Image (cartoon, rainbow, N blue to C red):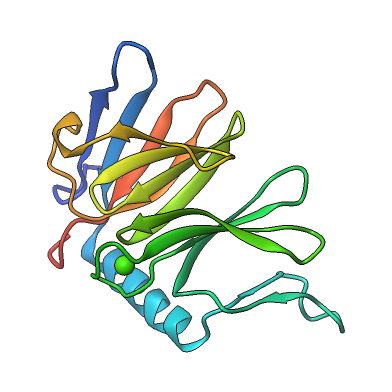
Length: 178
Ligand SMILES: [Ca+2]
């Protein structure tokens, strides 16, 4: 039988009564944090987003992004991208929206270091360091979870995923020690 890794923690906190979904916090092992940092370094060297099928000639490349982190595509073709801006610099993060016709707009700005994003019921969930934010597709912001709402103080909220029931899962990579 496998024994649980002591550095892996899985905790849960319940959101407000209006939203019965739960937040699952998990802390990755340090090696994953290192891999994440390396991926950030790679992104900072090539700050754009390329469709995975970009091996095809004429593939579309999205540029002029400020340390892009996560990409989520709406069923109607809109592409949402979290942009960290300066890593560790607050207030310069944003969410941009890129339309199939090539136009773009900023859905949200003034964020800190937004990372994981997910779409559910036409709302965009955003993990921003120690807050879980929710934006409607017009950019109206709701704070879904602040630091005190988590069982363990969030340090480095990273990925976010919503299951089919509306439960919200968010990973916390922790500090340099995991
Ligand atoms: Ca930032």
